[in-house]
Length: 68
Image 1: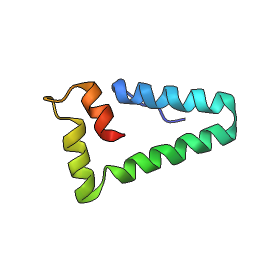
Image 2: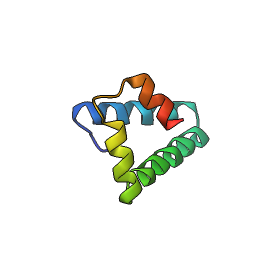
Image 3: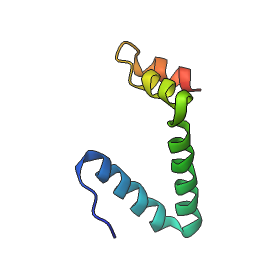
Image 4: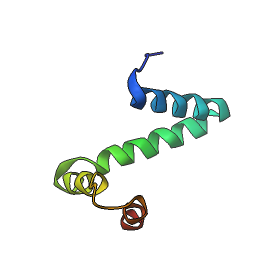
């Protein structure tokens, strides 16, 4: 198992352990979801999405509403 550091690594490790503790299908679903997020954040459209998500002038509620 690869050791991940920093906050993002802790979240990634926690998600992995939680999914794995349920069953392999859950782990596969989490993997598919993460790949979909990664794909959404790449390319020209991904750059726009990253800018939207990290916009400090928007509230969390506004970002959630925009993502829906």
